[in-house]
Length: 631
Image (cartoon, rainbow, N blue to C red; front, side, top):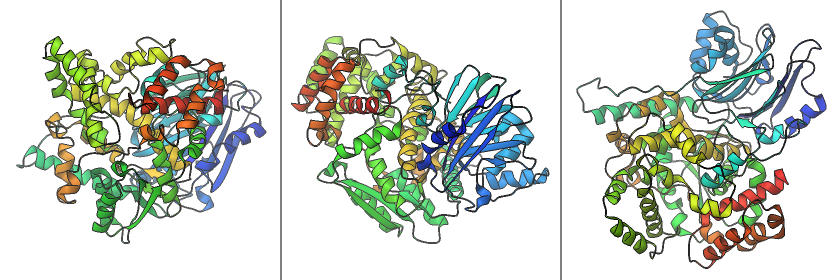
């Protein structure tokens, strides 16, 4: 894993060397092992600068240094990521006459580009974001992996283009404004993250997952290159569809885990004791001839959120070298650093334990595997099974619906117990039942509903979130299809994978996600709905596939997620800091949000008259980000 950066200009030197060096400095945490830069300039033609900070994983020698050139020195590459099918691609490219100077996986990209040009990304199976400068054609190709595992930001103005792994690396450029994009802010206030292609700054954009960008002669073209290939799952034997699909799923996942164990440094796994992470550990144990380092985290004094006993049991089953950490640090001490790390406002509170467990793992290994992506591929959230309940609620007469809603409002809904979370879900289902058929799922994944958002921010972009949902779920018709389409296209790349990338790279650790293998994503997209969700049972097929690998109580343990007790934090450790941030003179002078409405939310939450934990957390992270980057 690494940090990449580059600038191209239609004429003359693209960037001052000292400025480019400062831009590279901002990515040092992504690659502490080495750094390289290349500058190509001409008074009469386009110029380019490429930079790279290296976290050495495969071929630790200087031969793996980037930017990396082809045999002739006419094409240069800077890449962040891992190409898991590089051995197969290397055999093919060597057969076409290409020579290699390293054992790295990314050198294959150079030779694929020589053979296939801008179509090279379609042949890659891995996680990546890269830039290729073609000195012959004087053009730049950028590409990002299909799932959006690795980030890529860019800015384009006056024919000049700059790109980087993280937004902060582009801010030193004098032609990049820090003006906030109101559409991005509107989406953040709904989702608590900023989806691609937006970024929080008007002048900067994210390259969407599975897209490429071609810069030539001061013009830019952005287009998709590798959409998920879907087709109906077909039987190949006399077995039942479910039995055969389960075998195929196990084979796909086993192959993915095996490929993602490649490297010249030790690898471990994040282990919660849930189905996804336990499956990854079970399959790792097949291919690693020594005890696997596994890592889990618990919260002191918060038993509902503490999954360490479950992780401990799985670790014992597979003989791992298990490391536990108990979170007892003051959360307020971590928040400014988290806001600084994300570059954009990011309101997913599970970033806190993700950072802490990555930091713990980083003391032992350079690579960690996780179960991220399983829920989005195989229908793993309770909300994925909400379609029948929503349809049943819609059949109720309006008076009965209002009475049920009033009754639910009296229940002690909170995020500190299983019962409280069920009550919150029931309230959300009631709200979703009032939405149009196609947008019911959107109500379940919106952290701040439209009415509340209008109270705290009155200049929002009307209907923007609805349009995003319609665009990302186009072609999907059932509740489950639209749910999975939105989660795969938006929630996964713009929340979960952002969190995993930034928190692991903040401590110079490479996070790998075997469920997001290209072939596995194609396989999942072809499954019938009955193999994903059946009644209230989620992950139907994945649970069947796990039957020969894990005990029943691990497979069928209710899903918990990487939850954090944010609602209680905001009434305890974070109460003073949160109040000062949201209601203090700095926020009031800025007038970005309606201070009276925010104050009302705070007081109602503090007095336990409501649970606004996620919304208040998101507003706190917005304020901290604003002080760091936009003040």
